[in-house]
Amino acid sequence: MTALVIDHSAGRKSSEHPHEHRPATPDTAPSRELVAMPPVTVNGVAISRKAIAAEVQNFPARNPGEGWRAATRALVVRELLLQEARRLDIAADQRTDQDGRRETIEDALVRGLIEREVRVPEADEETLRRFYENNLRRFMTPPLYEADHILIAARHDDREAFAAARERVSSLRSTLATAPERFAALARDCSDCPSGTLGGSLGQIGPGDTTPEFEAALIDLVPGDISQPVETRYGVHLIRLTRRIDGRQLPFEAVRERIASYLAEHVSRQATAQYVSLLVGRADIVGIAIDGASSPLVQ
Image (cartoon, rainbow, N blue to C red; front, side, top):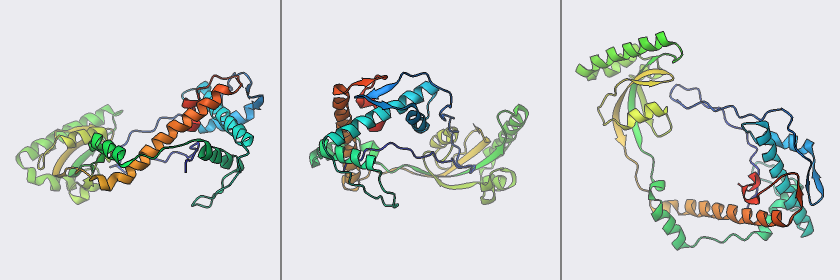
């Protein structure tokens, strides 16, 4: 089954745990400024400004015009598909998802049209294996690291405090250069991270679990090494790598279904984009230029 959906899901809040050192999400909330746009019609059917204004909230953008145009393109493509579904007398067979949510009649019409009109070839075994062989690095387990750290917390915008943190960490690094066995004790006594109570232990961490600066320093270490001072937005760290578990190659059989799903989705998007492009090409669309293949509805 081919699904055609506009993703309206809200973004998740990032964790504030001190080990989740992730960049802040930029504010791309849609502006409420009015946008000067000409009236838009699809084969004589108007797309109301009220409908566009309601839809624009689902298209965060850098400026009001960009969000307005994206919302308008999505509604134009949706209207085209609905018109075609009605022309072909597609039945609105509403379905209910696993959470008990029932499709709207319009969603059911669009899905039914795509399922009937868009042909998606299934990848054969040779294609699946070729994709696997050409993308071996995509099918490896991520490396894992067992590491300890000492954090002297300071904010970058407090120059005096950050300079003091650098100096404190440099002093600790000098101590550890001659007595590395004291790392756990110094973590318990000095670290501002909750892991200090565990001797600085972070347990097993993998790619993306820490800040880019922390991760880059960690990757360069060999077990037993203690890093030079590492600066992040949380302060200044010393990192000790205790164990590295390299990623391993997953066999084809373990990822076959994942590859098949990926290729099916990719081909489905392409086929749907081509179908929408055909509808756009023969439609009378006024008020906005649109390329069916780039419509948010088929991304």
